[in-house]
Image 1: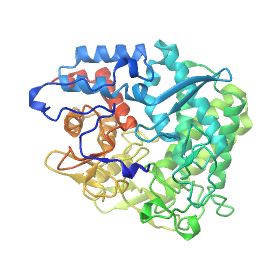
Image 2: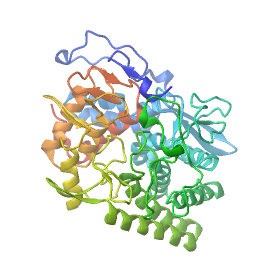
Image 3: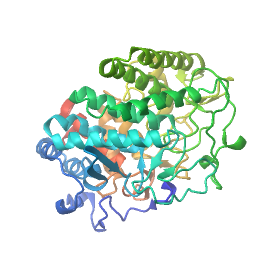
Length: 473
């Protein structure tokens, strides 16, 4: 099913359990909503130890409860780990959709990387994702989501694009490929393990480079096009499926955003800056692991070219905030000034290592995206955050944007404000959601959205390590 079809009003939990409707925050009663141990897909002793440590230190019992439910949610409910041809192999669903997004699967396990050194099975689980993603990239670098069962027919089989067996959806998103590189690089840096980086993985990265090159569109539009029979404009592309025109600049065209919504202008700036980081990481790996300095030089040159183009075409003088990053540009001078809740976003750039949090242009951009000048910024008496067009209605804040705001802040008051809003956004369910109404948090979408649960756990663990005083009641 389409993500947009998963609209709920606060009665279902991520573990598939019904919430006691009598629960109230004032009761300070926190029922067991985490899936029972015997039914969990995967268990990590290192993650369980972190939960115990967090609960001992957190004076705010509701945060302790949420941490217990959210951090392990991906492991509890969405992963399927096996050995395939003697190699680890891991399939990861998003939660309520039985398909593996390259982006989501990477992001869902990202917070667990820091626990791998104390948990060999967890390390194998992540290695299995790297192996699986390499196979998927080689299957089709333009697809964003895949099935475990290659014979399963996609609900999007009628899309006007080159659908293949095993593909759930074929929306071309630069960030999908960046996420696979991010996961691989940091796995290698944290473990030193080179085993996943075999000929298959090497070929996948080479194909990523070739795909990025084609989508710089310096020699025509390339082979990718996409259209869908739909009444939702953000689910299809104009002009024969190629999108609106762009002027070649060196940047990469991304026809869809990380929200899976169509771009207005194809040079999506957060994704291009993410690509700069990822390409440089691959250059380091190809030099160290394969001693392939020639290909590493190509990766580095592409990264530099993209970066220069971003700073040439995507820095805009805003009348209130000064120089800021545009969200999308087309190279002709047209710009789209906004931000979306999904990562990569303009708000998330320091989180991805694309800019420093202290960068003046980023700080100006941050003020813009967290203001009414951003058309997808919503605010009420109790909440403020960023949404987007994806859920098809206004006034829906994504907890992911509040979490990203907290992860990119060093200000105690701001982080505390984010925590307060996130607790309330749960609406007593014990889990995070895709989005919630700014006035009625009990009205939310996607009761089982593992990425948001896990990154919330990451945010809480970061506070535990760096600012534990903020975890008190």
